[in-house]
Length: 534
Ligand code: GLN
Image (cartoon, rainbow, N blue to C red; front, side):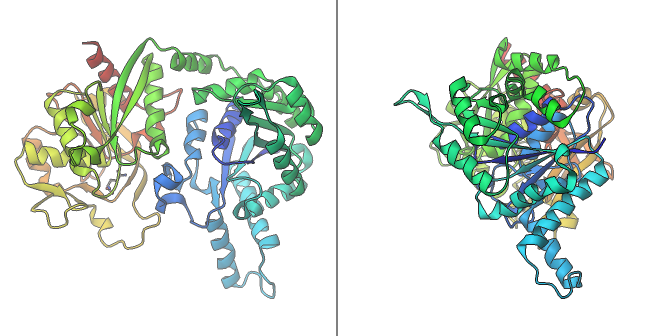
């Protein structure tokens, strides 16, 4: 069977949840199908690795080391697949390829233009992925909104693609917005009308329209949208506001989307969502509730911690527990605006996420000290591990210690550059990236959670625990519960006398899926629940 393609575009405004809609559509079609999820981003950066997470949300890291758009997090979490870095096209990647080809003389005699050279490159990239992966279904999500200049070549390539793959093998789904106006008490379709007219102007006639709206749209509104988009009203679906993103596939299915997709793409399979439904139910009506204090510096934009939030939700679903988050801006601790005791007074666990630079660091270190001394379950991620080591070196080993990331000339550089990182000047894609195996030490909390002798998790860092300090840290009671295969790098630490004080050099949140939570997050949530109940 040839690959079936689903192109997903969006309109009116950004932030409507196109990534979640795409992941949900793909989840409905999962069954035994091989699904490949492609995302096209208009920006000229080669990848989002150098962007500020406040501007662009979290940088998602794939097993192969690719730094990609955060929508890949949704794809992996909904589908349980492992995506590849090449599935994220950016204008930066496409333009670089075309310009490199021009220099090589591949287009001798020609004037290189957006149309057809950039659009041809996009289409051949899509086809290359399809040839390599041979998926049953390939979703192609186009970032931004139709009408953005920087996404226009992707939209045009998507239009042309129908001719190349055959109209029976491709459908177009458009996500639009139907605001509910409180003052008139009804949903208004004008923005969607304009949006769909613009899409038609680009030559794309959607097969299915998903309307983001507050509530399920009444039939007469769907009829109205159907009228000016030339499609049957049954192909107009509402993506209503919801509390739990994992409910979206179920809401789509209820409205007949799965049947419509199967019919349009001539697919024949059965998909059983009963287990998924049970997990969603557990997220919505859990037996228990705990609070985790997340202490970082990007707390003003939760999108910078998307995978951590989801990993806690997954672990919570499997412990029948709602995980409430309390965001603590550690600069407030540092400058005395907020007292630690007040900040964490109702927290059952403390999480220090990954990060870079000096802002808020001393605040994080004092929170870690508080967690260590007061037996509060603690999970440190990447920078969180490094700062837990600094804290331990200072307050237990009695060293005047720091990370050279913050204090280059510190007298005890307990955290220092990974040697291979020291002379790297270029910033794009040069950290220690992607999945690396760690050997787990028997008898540790970590090993009992993974229940195997090794764990492969994804990384994104330049610094490590300085091997010159391994001995003194261990002598003072710190356990290295996971180390790299070459035995040089400390991948996990824990403190045996503490109920749960574990930190990881990796980003274990990136491999957590709703149907299979990450073992470390599961252990942390379980420990916090235990501490809540005593
Ligand atoms: N800044 C630290 C490093 O580069 C930690 C990075 C992170 O938390 N992702 O090693």
